[in-house]
Image 1: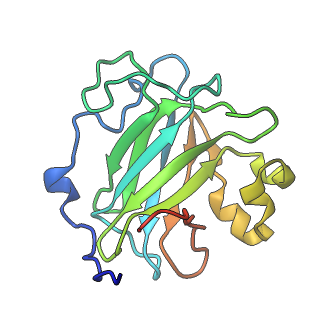
Image 2: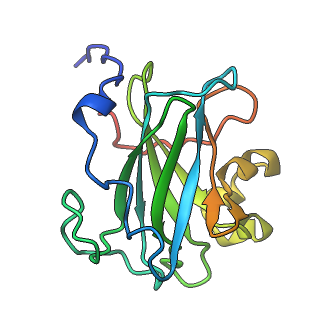
Length: 184
């Protein structure tokens, strides 16, 4: 069986897929809240103004949330999922909680999906908390990467937040993941 080539994703996100407070997994300024933010950049280092970023994450206790309500935020239910659109400078931001490790000894991370113009399909990556690169053997994905590639998956701690830039290609390209059954 042959498959037909797909169409590119985007740039319709700002018109069709924007959710009210979709980037607020918790209300900004609430106890324990942090800001996960960054820029989406193309191969030339230029901002991608029409991308959409989704994150999935564990709660601070490392448990995967099972609560419903991601599409209609109520201000107190943490669902572990959010969606943010980039602005004209390629910037995105989430108000969330720091995830805990889902398995003992493993570093905590955000699962990240990127949708952008020109992509044939979405891209998957991870954003690990600072310190994960200090113990790469604790995570099979990090252990399999050279240090310079590993660095593209590590957030930088800032005052009350974490910075995670996503480079779609070129120098410093973010490591993207491929799942065996994805795209079939």
